[in-house]
Length: 297
Image 1 (cartoon, helix red, strand yellow):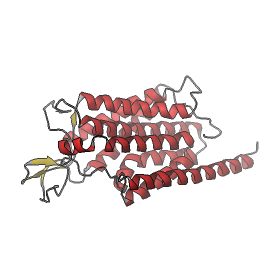
Image 2: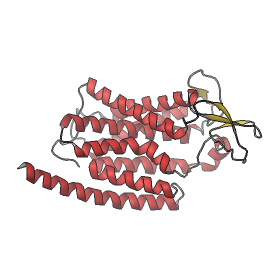
Image 3: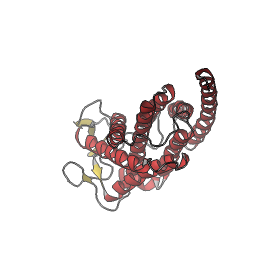
Image 4: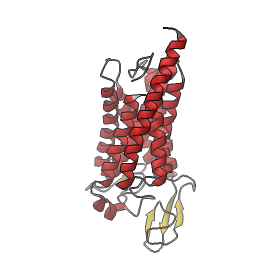
């Protein structure tokens, strides 16, 4: 097949995937908006990310993104009342995700999908695929840990010191949250590989996702316990991520770096997951988390 013909067929296939990506992401985003899982800016972010990942990565990439978003949204609404009473005043944002959250959780995954789609270098594409998986596995692991860990019957402990903290405190971890985190990371890798057909034994996607997702999730907790901006409400006498507490009282800086909000922490955590995934695959010489080099599914 000539390079010109290959390029033409590849461009046509990519164009169809972009259209399918736009269709799926738009439909899911609208449903999520109506179910109050996204606000208007979050809808824009979800559509842009979904269309790019479907079009530039392929079906297994796009469907993995849908798995992350749908599972995370369902968990956000799971026992929402119990979570609100336990730790709602801790979090900077509610269950409705906005554009900043979409970018923090899916921005790097979108970046790697674009790199994958624009290059023909097998090594670069494989690294991009590993980076994509690490970023998305981290986002999934961290979301599952947050949404289920806050329901733990045992008191969270700060990851850096082991000191008991209130549920929802940034940097606090529980056995339930850690188990949920590992399941979220592993299931993302398993889902990704399943959609590629389990076509090679040299494709430890679930293992790569587990290692990188847990590394990114723990890094998120360390950042939350050390440098994430936290505030104190003098009226309610409680720690929070909000500059204006839910009671309407302006909060006072307590610790951390002013610009290091939850979205910044999430972005850095996904970056950590990406680096770990690419480094693991590079070192183990297992860069094929299987992909057909001449095209994509």
